Amino acid sequence: KNQVEQSPQSLIILEGKNCTLQCNYTVSPFSNLRWYKQDTGRGPVSLTIMTFSENTKSNGRYTATLDADTKQSSLHITASQLSDSASYICVVSDRGSTLGRLYFGRGTQLTVWP
Amino acid sequence: EADIYQTPRYLVIGTGKKITLECSQTMGHDKMYWYQQDPGMELHLIHYSYGVNSTEKGDLSSESTVSRIRTEHFPLTLESARPSHTSQYLCASSDTSGIFGSYNEQFFGPGTRLTVL
Image (tube, rainbow over all chains, first blue to last red; front, side):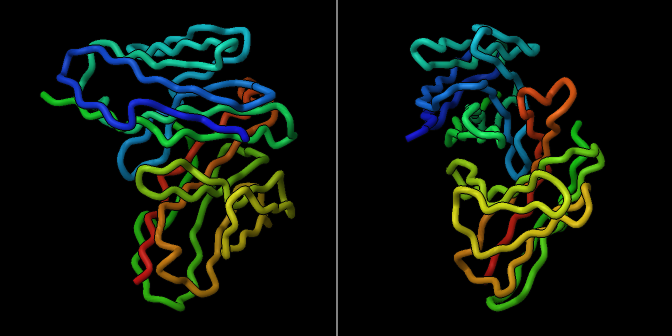
């Protein structure tokens, strides 16, 4: 069964600190992996997207890594800000259908305290 | 910022009412999707469309129905709402061509928070 597991479920850090969120997946055949940021009451917004051949991708203070062999990804946030408080969702796409089905993790709820 | 809109943003209604959640996108995307999301849970695909006059059911069984008469419009309808329909409904669209085509990059609307009393 195709699945996406994220850890930790929730995380509290102080403003200015760094943090790393984890994602493990079993989706096959793999197409790409993306990280979304979802603010409370809003739709998800894409942060990074990586294909099989890419092992790191940055977007400002966000850096995602991908190890396609171990089927693991991480999202590193540098110098956190209060506005980083949100749910971060790992999403994996398969290439086994014309739809390009997306498999969603439950997200890591990040809270940044001043 | 993606140009995809959902209305209403919040809706509180009584059991048995018929409701339609609106979703529109101005990007000319061919594919559109409806997801259902409960607090702390993953998004579940309930409907999708490849284009005009195309609609399919997603992974999660839903009593809702959808239509795709125009490219930019993908409304979701509940004929008789029940408390079990209380959830967040997210609409998304993607383009199979261009820079995002190969990734099936999906752009999400802000969502509709539905509460059925």
